[in-house]
Length: 211
Image (cartoon, rainbow, N blue to C red; front, side, top):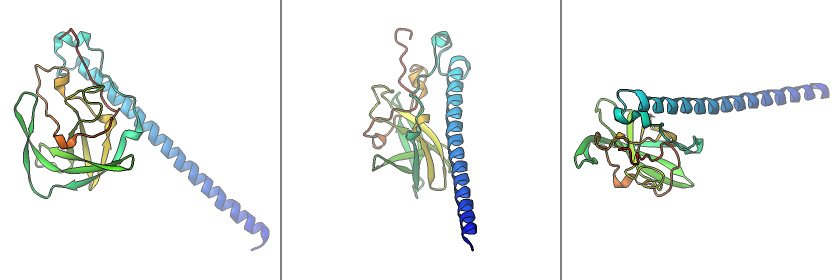
């Protein structure tokens, strides 16, 4: 191969590398934009449902005063890659509720994730014994009782094998936050209390003098 051919080959390889890099960057940006758009749409739909839908926990008499769900800004840093460990035993447990009664749930396993170099673990539940993929994760964190509901929040997600998309941007309040008299809510177990603040998902809500 002469010098010109070597140069041409180098230019081709470099050009391919640049194109592939640009494609990867474009896909990453597009994926990021798509995520933000979908999250914004889901939040708008949640607020609209709460304001108008007959299935909303907001009492009909108070819907005219309800201004929508209050959220933390969407932050992809709170979207974690979780690893699922299955509970090898079929285990039904009683999860306490705010009315003093219990919800009977299946303890299906645990999802672990890393935050600032440390590994944390959350217990996961299901209500349907025929559904092996859906995970219900009630939790508390350092914002509980401050900027978020003191009783904790929930995440609904699914596992793909041992992988879990643990997105705290989707953390939501139980219905009793919006209608304490009409709903009783599952209380997160003590082991699902995280020792740091998760400023993601739904914020606290207070009717003030309206209710």
